[in-house]
Image (cartoon, rainbow, N blue to C red; front, side):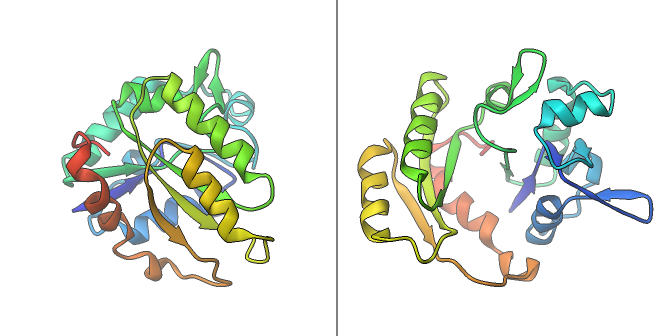
Amino acid sequence: MAIGMKPVATGANRQNGILVNDDVEALRAASPAEVPTADMNPYIFEPPCAPHIAARAAATKIDLQRIKSAFSACRKKSDVVVVEGVGGWCVPLGDGLWLSDIAAVLELPVLLVVGVKLGCINHAVLTASAIRQSEQPLVGWIANVIEPELLAMEEVIACLSAQIPAPCLAVMDWTPEISYGDLSGCLDHLKGECQLRTPPGL
């Protein structure tokens, strides 16, 4: 069984005095096991901005040990934990702390999701290079089509496949609407794709 975790989330709405983030809710809907919010999402901030800015505005310091403890709690409820990032591999979380540090401290392999749109080749190739330089294992990538009218889309995805030094595990077609229920099974699919070549923390 696989469940999702998002250590840091920004851009949340207040509902009955509680901060709610769409990404966290999507992961909760796709996760078959009940996991306390504090474990699935240790840090949540209301402003839709970079994590280090949101954390500073909230007078909060993001702590890797708190994230590691939450990850361990999630692991006790599942076979695999799929950890979602925030913003990108090189997004700052605070003083000298980066998103990549979360993958390092949790000893996670990395699955790169590429938003397929104009300009994505440069961003994806640079990100893949940064991941490899960090010595974290890049186990694969997913093409997430977010610009369905992109010119020469097949050629763009072919170029990405040639330049990213990891297999393309899936191409997610654009859809105008998707419900959280439609995500059921996605985490287990990622587990099935990656578990044979990665440690059990994916």
